[in-house]
Length: 166
Image (cartoon, rainbow, N blue to C red; front, side, top):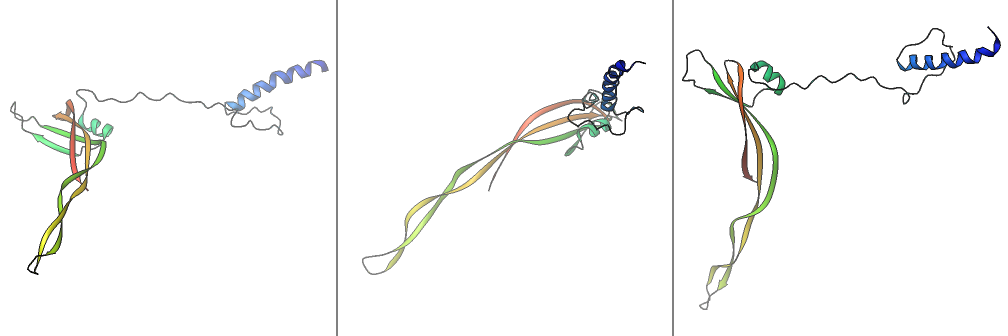
């Protein structure tokens, strides 16, 4: 092979070596003094994400539990239809939002003593002041799943508000 063709061969081998290195393989003909390719130059090979699993009518209760977790509450349901049927409602509850506000819950008397004209003292209300507390309102999203004979049938979504004072 003539000497003037040698650079052309190197120009072909170098891109092949680069592609092989990016793919994670090495070529046997690579020289030992070749420098590794920086991580920024390597393209990551990503596998497509599996499709998101969804709840469907007729889904076995065990699958539903594996998908969304154990219910916070299980309510047995009496079925008037046929004996042997087993029904229950699984309740899931999650905090959607929380707010707080200062509210007046009453008044407090400020008492004092006054001397009367005859020289005796008596207790009197000098003033009143409001008594305030923080009222917290938590809004929950409640999902109820009807399970009949170990299979998911239907669901309802509702909101529930709870209030308490701090």
